[in-house]
Length: 75
Image (cartoon, rainbow, N blue to C red):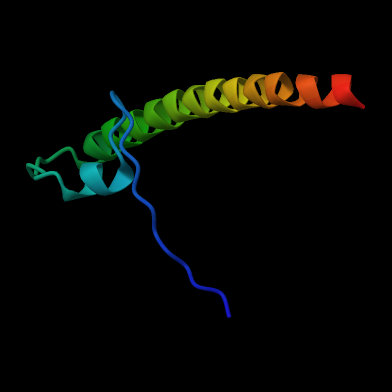
């Protein structure tokens, strides 16, 4: 049986989708412009998150390589 658990993570400077959607939205006559603005914000957040994840994975890989060096010397 699979259990799905939603994990919410806060990253400084990046609004989550739920935060953006829960924000009070002022209705304007230019709904298309509003949607474009929201889409641009979401795209920017996705790009920031991708950079953040790449850096995190790179750091994790480096830490893993450092942890494995003593094991390779013992072999």
